[in-house]
Image (tube, rainbow over all chains, first blue to last red; front, side):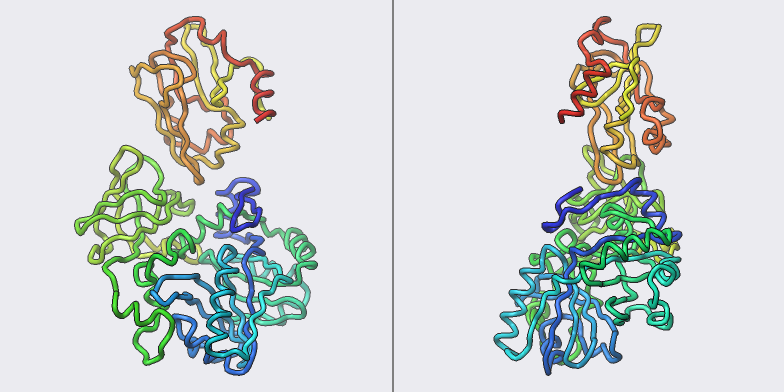
Length: 344
Length: 127
C-alpha cells in the first residue's frame, strides 16, 4: 500500500504484470475512488466552462458527452487535467485528480465568484468510483450489475449516463474499452464484490501506471504541472487556440508558445528501464524523461519525455540510465491501444 | 515466507550457499523478490571482479524500481548466471533456484558470521 494524494492505495494485489495483461486481454478493475467528481450547477454553466477550461465545451453537444481538458492558470501552467461531462445545460460534472481536488475547487470557486456567482460547485465526496477496463469489461459489467446493460449497450465511447444510482461512463485511463462507474460510497463494496464474482481482476496503481503509459496518457504531477505548458506536454490537441473564445491561460500560451515537445521513447539497448528524471540527449539539445517504465505488452522499456522541438519520430536519442548511455528511438504515442502495439 | 534452512543470509536480503568446492553461491531472498515485484532487468558482476563485503555489485530492476544487490562477503566472482539475465521473471518464481553469482571467498570462514534461517526470519519480522 502507498500514499497517493492522501489515499492509501495498493500498488498491486498480486503480480503487477498479470494485472496489466488482464486489462489488455480480458477485464480488470481499479478502485479509483480517490478521483473526485465535482458538479457545477446553474444557468450559464457552459458559458462559465467556456472560459475556465482550455478545451472547448462547445464540442459537447449531446447530453452525456465527455471531454478531456486541462484546467490552466493565468500563466498557462497546468493546474489539473480533467474530464467534463455535459449532463444538462445547467449541470456539468468534472472529474479531477485526487491530489489536486482542493486546489481545483478553490480556484474554480474564485473564478465563479468573479464571473458567475450564481453557479454552485459541489465536490461529490459521497461518490466512489470503480474503473472496469479491458476488451471484456463491458460484458462483465452487464453480467455483474443488473440494469447496466439496458442503460449503456448503445452508448458510444466518451459518453456517460445515469443508470439508477450508478453513473456509468465509457471512459478510462488504459487505452482499452470499458467503463468508469460512480456510485454512492455505501454501495461500492457490493459493486466490487459483484465484479469479482464476474471474474474481473482487481488491479493496483502499478498496472494502472503501465497501462496509461502504454496508452500515451499523461499523469498529472509527473508529466505536467503548473510549471509547464500543455503545449510542452503533448496536449496541444486539447487546447483550442484557433477560435476567438477567450479562456484562462490563453494569452500566456499565445505569448509564450515554447520550444519543447512531449514524445514517446522506446529503449533500443538492453541495460535497464527508462525512469522519470533521466536525462535525454538529442541532436537539438537536452531533455528529460517525465515517466518511464517497462511495458509488459511490448516487453521493452518505454517512456514519455519532454525534449526540444524539431526532434522527430524515428530519431535516435541517448538516455542516461545509471552510469550508462542507452539508445532510445523517438516514437509518437500511444504505444498500445485496444490490445494492439502501434510502435514497431 | 520461504526461508530454506540449509542457506545463510545477509541483512541486505541476499542468500548464500556454501558449495563443496569452497565457492559460495549468492542470490536474493524470496522476501526480497516479493518486495521488489515483477523483475524485468538484472545486471550481474563480471567474472574475475574482486568484491569487498558490502559493495554494490549487481542490479535487480522490477517494473516498480531498481535495487542494488550487495556482495555479502568479500571474494572474487567466479561465475555469473547468464540464464537469469535473459529471464528475470524466473527469479520471482523461485528465488532460491535463481542464483545470481558465485564467489571464491577471500576468507574461507566468511559464512560463519552470517544469519541462519531463524535469524533472517527474525530480521524480516522485525523490519
